[in-house]
Image (cartoon, rainbow over all chains, first blue to last red):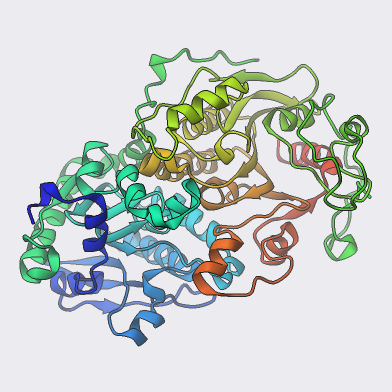
Length: 280
Length: 288
């Protein structure tokens, strides 16, 4: 089907397609010598986030990937890609490590959202995500995030505070899953397709809203129809953006990353509005 | 009984501070709030005028949630509040039109005299100048939006430049659906300002009131130097209804309560409303 004519809901279905390449598929393609590193050094490890180092284009790179898992046991073990607090804490630990050794960071996003369960709440999922988001603004090495499947809510954003944010053509990125948005706004999940349309969650939508930097084209029919081609395009796009960040942004990398997120939503120009005078 | 730390001695582990400043429980008389006819805690007929004088805390201890203006009246010294950026108004970026248009939602809120989900300004608390931001749950569930994010960032930036503390009061369902991913991005945007407050060494105090969930809880609300949970506040990332739907888990009693968050290391203290202002005044004294 020609991509241009797909509805938002059709994109959602492609983004969730069971045969769709997952983060670990891409990571092993980028860095066949990938070594997984585990644990948050506090209470545990979160298999919903794969993290580790590997050689990519001749240099050691830190990779993160939210991982859904394919066989049922693997899917369950990985909580279907829904991260617990331990995952965000592991990411913070290893992002600081990457900065220590000047490894660039590649973060692949594919999650329905953070884990919506009692254990995650008991372990402080809200502050874990908040701290992760804040910490990305202190990591002084290039960070490229790419949404390869589902970019669900704060659970995705916690791993997507980057210098460049890319999206595979049939991935989605949203404030909430369409089902959740329908439950909130319509009080009925049945309206998920309408919600998907309203949320502007497709890659072309987000490019237009200037939230992302590039839409990475997928083979006709979706990334799963030709994994090699999809992986090559992802590899190429991440490399181009990483080069651009390394060449142009390095000295002001934190300032530029911060500015990128400060400027979301077209209300950033303080000069356009009366600047209040200090009260003292 | 209002006053005293919630939960009795088990909560107040550690020596009680002698020499906390003696400060009135409210900076100025509280405005009216919407009240049920009977108390949800003890069932008695409510007397709105009497309740207002006791900061909307029933004799039985039940706390009625406050709106933004009531929070400002509660915390700010009388006559010291100066609001900023009230002229920033939300925009229907996504042309959200079903089942109800976002513009209609915004117009209705404006009709009711509500001005966005976060109000920002300067005030003094027991004589200490602060930048204050208060969420208002009446405005689309106190949802984090582009305007809310912008006001929060400006208030934190001004606090940083002027080197005076930033005080936040939350009451929020999370990020606003009708602003889509633009609302989601506010979680990152506000944390830029939090990171810079940290670097500048400017104190940040967060009061988490009922309810604080989703993108608000998972961005700035729990990242303060001191996190204060109001007694009876429900605080979490995912709400109990969604957790039950998603995992079929039984939700234990007291789950996501202020005391639950204290027990799980997420907040420094749980306070009853009549004690908030005096405690905040003491923190301000200690940190400035």
